[in-house]
Image (cartoon, rainbow, N blue to C red; front, side):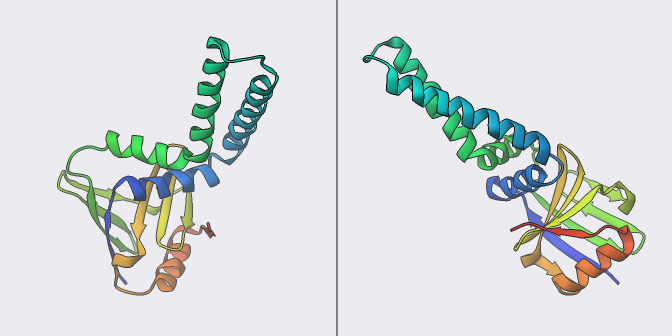
Length: 170
């Protein structure tokens, strides 16, 4: 049995990948960072409310609070944008073929063969399958461009060849 995906990596898909990493292997670290960020915002707002007027300190505090809020609210988009900027030219589109013994990804830059034991975790969103290799490396597969079977068949195939359970992310 063979499955083929064509996936285009852009800022939106990289944000999906960043979100999958954040909700799986980076979950504990992400919780701590969010707690710290929201506490910093709360203390910053408290400082702004109790301040006696507009001065350099209040302007800097307001700017810091705004930056932290943007980072907290747009975290996945920011990480996706940074990841897209770090991609090698020619790797924006990948065609990946999955077979029993492993899978092969082909881009304009080259061809990479993978074994299933390299996968640490498999996540699934409504539109993508995400393979997590470690805390900062993942690959994304677009369900809209799946050939060779259905998403359900591919999920069963993955579970049989990897021994991993596919985690569903909303």
